[in-house]
Length: 125
Image (cartoon, rainbow, N blue to C red; front, side, top):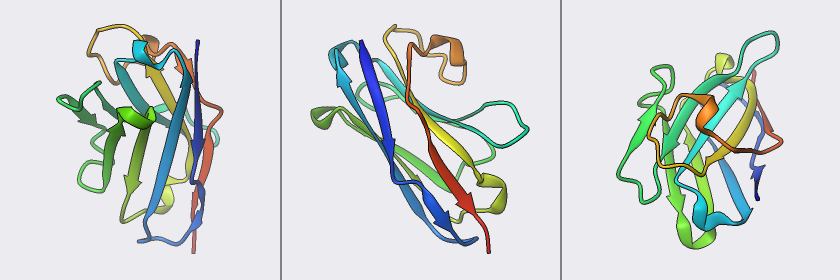
């Protein structure tokens, strides 16, 4: 079992930056892909970004490309999401997910075996 736990959410103004962290515990050696998804009120869950085990593969949703950056520290079993130039439409609950398989299909939620509880990010003036 792997348990991802997110931290770093909060309320910020448009144009601000925020960094989300996700620390995974348990059988972390089995994790290949770690990703971030988000869900806004009344909307479906949306892929944000993902990174493979040693960072050779990284993929972003078009909506965040150029503004968000994902990184990973395997020594700490952690993945980070640096969010810059935040917009009100980035407001959502952000969830960290971990995939134990070897498939690189990062925006497919079905490859992820473990999910965190989520961290609220609110962008408002």
